[in-house]
Amino acid sequence: MSANPDHPLVGVVMGSRSDWETMQHAVQKLDMLGVPHEVRVVSAHRTPDVLFEYAASAAQRGLRAIIAGAGGAAHLPGMLAAKTAVPVLGVPVQSKALNGMDSLLSIVQMPAGIPVATFAIGNAGASNAALFAAAMLSAERMDIAAALAAFRQRQTDEVTGHDDPRT
Ligand code: RP5
Picture 1 (spheres, rainbow, N blue to C red):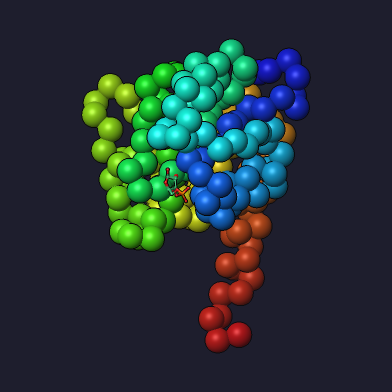
Picture 2: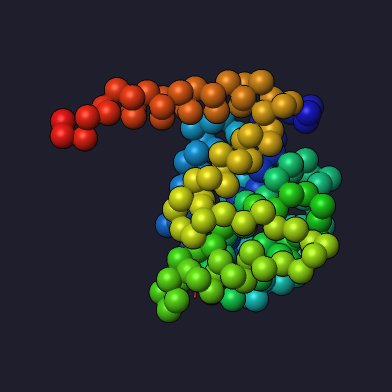
């Protein structure tokens, strides 16, 4: 566990400011669960040196997971994973040209040896990446474990409390 409970444990990065519409859903979940995080635009294509520095310093800065969203030829998650052992959770952003299939396949089809945990295309993937990161941190942060359990219970209650779809 980190000495300072407020320093970022999760990095949320994205290839472009245009990815924020999707990646804000990850940040909303981290906020809701009280997971300390940071948010950056880091482009594999436009700022490769920033990408390398971000990944190379991630572990020593205390990051326990990196949620990386990118669209199109989505190299960002794989390149981050190549430069750090901190787990990388990849979010395929829904591209205009190919509806995110390009993003998904770019992220999920990593050759054996450098894993990227890959989530669904778009908003659902961004939300679930954050929930997954919170689950990863739950063993060492009981406050995050409790917040995650409470969220899941609320979600269950919303279904069971409104289980007649006609009302
Ligand atoms: C990728 O290219 C980004 O992740 C983004 O999804 C896509 C388009 O970027 P912009 O042209 O909108 O900046 O690198």
